[in-house]
Amino acid sequence: MTENRVVLITGASSGFGRETARLLLARGFKVYGTSRNPSAKPQETGVGMIALDVDSDDSVRHGVKELFDETGRLDVLVNNAGYVLTGGAEETSIAEAKAQLDTDFFGPVRMAKAVLPAMRKQGSGQIINISSMAAFLPVPFEGYYAAAKAALLAWSEALRHEVKSLGIKISVIEPGFFRTNLGDARRVAEYPIRDYDHLRVRAVTALDDDFRNGADPKIVGETVLRIITSKNPKLEYAVGREGRYRRLKHLMPQSIIENGVRKHWKLDL
Ligand SMILES: NC(=O)c1ccc[n+]([C@@H]2O[C@H](COP(=O)([O-])OP(=O)(O)OC[C@H]3O[C@@H](n4cnc5c(N)ncnc54)[C@H](OP(=O)(O)O)[C@@H]3O)[C@@H](O)[C@H]2O)c1
Image (cartoon, rainbow, N blue to C red):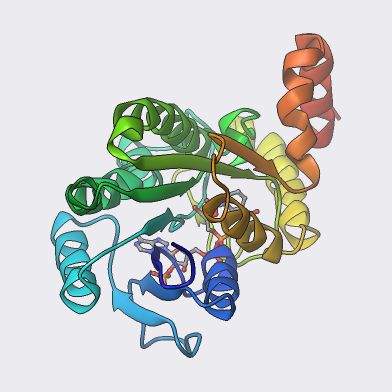
C-alpha cells in the first residue's frame, strides 16, 4: 500500500503543514489539509482543504466527517497545527496557559480520538504528532508551549503501546528552529511583570532570531515522508540543527547543558 493512501494534515495553510502537503502530493498521496479559515489564503492546488479548528470538539467532528464522507478512509493523520505563547511561567494567566495546551496538546488528542475508530476498523493507520525540541529542552519564557509539547510526546508513547497490536503506528517529530510563520503568529502573555522584563526581552529577541535563521521547513516534510514510507517507524525523530541536543542531553552533565541554555538565551548578561 503506497501512493493511494489518504493523508490528513492539520494546519496545512502554512509552514510545515504546507510543505508536507506539497511534498506528499508530488509523491502521489491523496492529501487533505485543515485550516481555521481555508479561504483566507491561497492554498496548495490539489490539496483538499477542510475548515477545522483543533480547539473545538464540534469543529473536529464536522471536519473529520467531511473527510470520511469524501474518502471513506484515512491512512495517515499528521497532527501539526499549533502556535507558540511567550511569557514567563509566573506572568502567564491560567486561561492563557490552558489555551496553549488546548491547541498544542488537546488539539492532537481531539484529532486522534476522532480518527482512531475508523483506523481500528480498518486494522491499519498511522498518526504523526509534531512536538518540538522544547519537549526535551524547554525554552525560558515559553514554558507552557514546552509543557504542551512534552505532554504530547509522553501521551504519544503511551498511545503507541496501546494501538500497536491493532495495526496503528504512532511517531513524534521534534523539530528544532525552522523558518515558518510560527514566530510571527506567536501570542504573548497579556500581563508582564516588570522584574522579568530584561530577561524576557533578551530571551524572546534571541528566539525571534532563531526562527528567522531557522532551517528549511521542507526537512520536516521529508521526515514525514520518511516515516510514512518506513516499515518500522521509530517513536521519536529529532530534526533540524538542534536535533543533536536530544542525545547530548543524556550524555552530558546537567550543569553543562544548563550553562549552554542560559548562555543561548542571554539570561546571565
Ligand atoms: N517552526 C518551528 O521552528 C517549529 C519548531 C518546533 C515545532 N514546531 C511546531 O510545528 C507545528 C507547525 O508550525 P509551523 O512552524 O509550521 O507554524 P505556522 O507556519 O505558524 O503554521 C501553523 C499552522 O497551524 C494552524 N493552526 C494554528 N492554530 C490552529 C487551530 N486552533 N486549529 C487549527 N489549525 C491551527 C495554522 O492554520 P490557520 O491559521 O490557517 O488555522 C497554520 O497552518 C506547530 O505545532 C509548531 O508548534 C514548529
